[in-house]
Image (cartoon, rainbow, N blue to C red; front, side, top):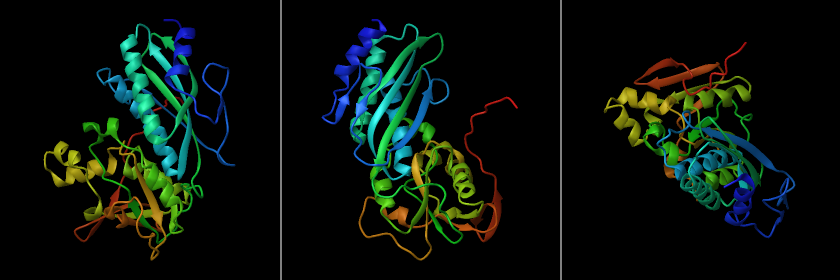
Length: 305
C-alpha cells in the first residue's frame, strides 16, 4: 500500500464529526473551535525509549494519545482534536499498522477527541508516533506557576512501578483536571510523567523557586512499586518518588481552603502529601527526621554544549 491509498483509508477510519469542516485528505484540517482559547500540546513515543519492539501496537497507539491527553488534563482542558504523525519502519506489516490505528482511535474516543489529520512516512529506523492534541479550557487554565509558600501538595493517584504495565494502560485524569480547574483553592498543577520529584521541582521553579516538604507516610505507593521493590519499604518509596510515567495530576492547594464536596477525586487525593516551603529544595519527613532529596526522575540526554 502506498501513502496516498493509506491516507485515503484514514479518512474513512477516523470518521469526521459535524464540526469538522475539512477533515483528513487535504493539506490541513479545518475545525470549529468550541472556545475562544485553545490548549495545545505535542508528545511523541519512540520505540526503544517509551516502549519496546515487543509492545503490542494497540498499546503503543493508546499510550501516545493518552500521554497528550494527560497534558491537557493538567491544564484543566477538555480534548477536541488530534493530529497524528506516523514514522513507520520500512516493512511494518499491515496488521501492525491496523492495530496501531485501533489503539489510537480507541484512546481518542475514550477521551472525547477526534483525529482530524496528520502525516505518514517510512524510514530505516524504529517506530515513532507523534500526536498533537488540541483542546479548550473547561474553566480557567491551570498552569505550573501559581504555587505559594504554605500551599498543600496533592496527587490524584498512586505512584511508582509504572514499568510493570501502567505506563501502557494508564487513564488520563481528564475529569479530575477539568474539575480541579473549577476549584478556587487549586493554584498550580502538572502531569507527573518524569517522576514525582522531578515534576515537583519543575512546578516549584515555575512558581518562583520555592521548596517542598513531603511526608513519607502520605505518599500513595502503587502495588507494582512494592512488588518491584521486593517488599523493601524504602525502595518502594524511592520508586514512587522517581520512577515516572505515572500520569497522575500533582497540584498545589491554598492552605486551609478545601475543595468542593463531590467530584471525581478519590478520597485519598484530598489528603496532602506535603507542603510548599520558602527554602528551596526538596525534603522528606520520615520518622521524625528531615532529609534532603535529589530530584530524581527521567530526563532525555540531549547532548551537545
